[in-house]
Amino acid sequence: MSHHPASVEVIDCTLRDGEQTPGVWFTVEEKVHLAEALSAAGVRVLDAGFPASSGADLEAMQEMRHRGVRASIGATARPLPQDVAAAEKAGADEVFMFMPTSDLRLRETLGITRDQASEIMRAGAREVLGRGMGLNVVFEDATRADPEHMAALVDEVCSDGTAARLILADSVGCAHPAGMRKLVRFLAERLDPAVAICTHAHNDFGLATANTLAAVEAGARAITCTVNGIGERAGNADLAECLAALTHLHGIEHGVDPESLPALSRLVERISGIHMSATKPVTGFNVYRHESGLHVDSMLKNTASYEFLPASWTGGERAYVLGKHSGTSLVRHILGRAGAECDDATAHELLRELKCVADERDKTGHDRAFLAKEEFTSAALAGVPEDVLISGYRRRVEEDRGRQDHQ
Image 1 (cartoon, rainbow, N blue to C red):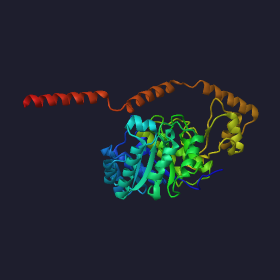
Image 2: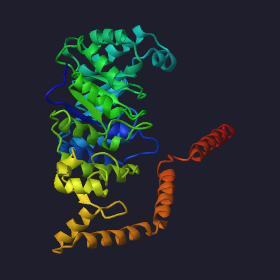
Image 3: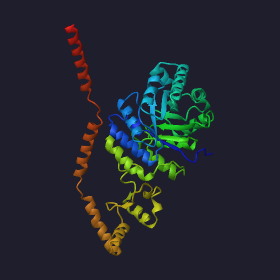
């Protein structure tokens, strides 16, 4: 039985979780520009930063407010007064208040009990609501937590419609679609219907998009994504993939303009330094290009033969590529567009010559591009050199010694 909603709310996390990708950083102006582009595309909610952790995030969020970004501006925060105060200072409309829920994280990371965690979360929720911001409760590491414990937290923290959304984070990407469906249904039965269940899926096993869709099938009414799927480790659920699947596989509305997706993808490639594969679903260079002779022959007869996701959905164009695997159908098609006709013998002869050219093409460019990519990636995503930290420490030690000698 399907529980999926007629529409879902899209929350983009590129500005926060996307920037947490190791080695990635955005300038304040880049953050604001991306926020404007996402909002213009129809994304309704932005997880725009972690202002208690970053002064740049706080500044960028204030500037988003100043420039009139239409999307709701959300701030990530721990359930701590100083984090919530920073969110308010940043001008956030709402807060994504996160707290580990698995025993492993509570015990090993925070050294607290379930009861202590519950009290901290309740106090954090009161702080957010008391400052007049919307509340989203994020169950971090939810897919490794005890469902009964989370159900109790739902009763304690999300009661009486105080929270707008309950976000289930698959923080280490270990969920599978069947398990995600089961978890969403279990918690939905305990939750006030006014509170929307939402997922935050990581892609460690390549299942972030699948788990996001599984949650929607089970009744989740909101999803989180990042442009190009960037994020911690293997990244997050990809915005374009989720939207394409919602539209074409499930018939679910989301309110985002699909024609904006290629430009968003290129923008995030440029400012993140993480470049996408040509075969990346939905926005990749090769997604709507066909070379295989059998495929092209079928496509020329009916484009539905090998294209379920139409190029026009993202504002792109279908292309047929001449190459090693081409067939005579494409030869005739191209000549026909040029106003020329040829018989079978001529088509086969031209195809033979074409394949010889394809086989003899120089591949030194491949080597240069690969080496340049390797060099760029290792440099761009390297982060700040450790020597900077060590030299800064040594400088402070010397300064302290100098002050002590002077005294």
